[in-house]
View 1 (cartoon, rainbow, N blue to C red):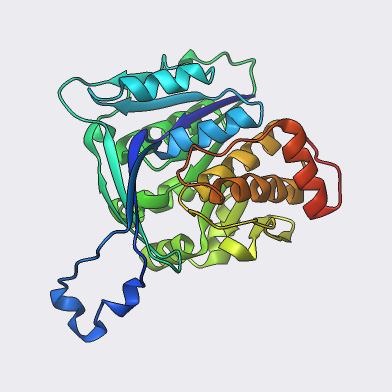
View 2 (cartoon, rainbow, N blue to C red):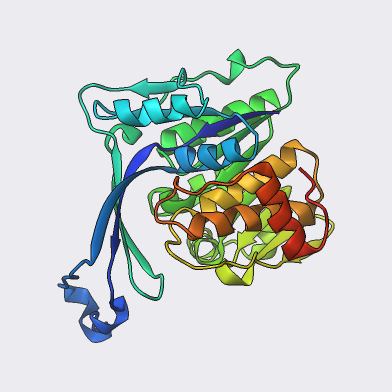
Length: 314
């Protein structure tokens, strides 16, 4: 299956705050917020929604196409993608701007505050869905990126009958209620975490059942509580995979999405999609950074079997 990943390539500056954000934010003074957090560690890693999903897809045996824009400082990142066997033909470089940067601060309870510089990500890409071979099974992933791309590729998918996954993530605040409703309507898969889903319901006025009626599959991740997957016929709860040590939750959602996409490409059951996502996410949270985890097929399959008492379906 051709997996087209639209979204972002970015540098993640990951910071650990040893305390709790809530201890430094006064609820009655939120209108004049002025806080400073002393950071314990700071590292810079490769990230971005498209890059993170592509990384885990590679580990799972898939070779997606990445559609994204980067800046003049992206040579090392592009070289890393090529070293993994990923094509960079559909990644557009802009010499007059820097690559997107996500500044991610995590407290000891795994709460996160993120400041995102869009940089080249704000530039519309020029990839044409019509260049795809119509005989090939294709799915397009609309992950967090610039909204012009999200809306244009959604329209192209609808015109050409190509299924798409809507994964809004951090773009939710920048999409209008009407744009959110448009992107949701007709999505083959709509995936968020529970916090994002509530934000979308608040902004659009849509209830969860109304959203569910407009998409083929609604997937909601619940952190350590697993996930729920709703289709037109059923609602399935999937347990989380056991984690050896939570080191950094950043990128766990993208790894989960890679597991789901891999399962879709292999025609797995709804429950298996969630289980594959759960195992992929567990590996991601056990290391620092979003593209630092590693596993072989046998290691992944063994962990899947140990957690869910069935043979790994991929």
